[in-house]
Length: 151
Image: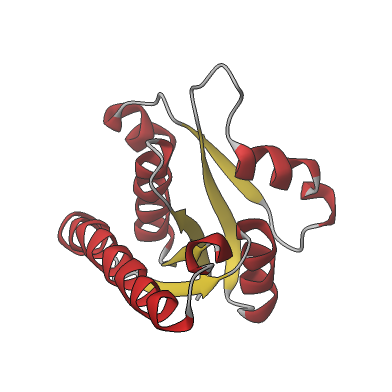
């Protein structure tokens, strides 16, 4: 089964990327894999403190994931899987794509900021010609209705 890989983070555009991935998966018989990356700078403390912070970060991610997962299950009939990795976001995204051969499309949300679409979109779109899968970039300003019409 082809999976749509979508990145879970705290950005507003993440919501549209999640919605798009779930709707496409539902319409094509695919799956959704949600990737959360915990950056290493969160753990630059003593070992005991770092372990506690790591556990808290995972708990926050799991709670955040469950909100999206419930919507995907209830509204789209898609049961997403969660993958949590630790490291720098771009290398971890690329590693996940490499390790899971069922991932067929990377779905990213583009921000509406004057600074550009966001660091993931900027970096990954520059190297899109060398990626083993296509990238779908979902505009952060699309409404639910517009997302439904294009998915």
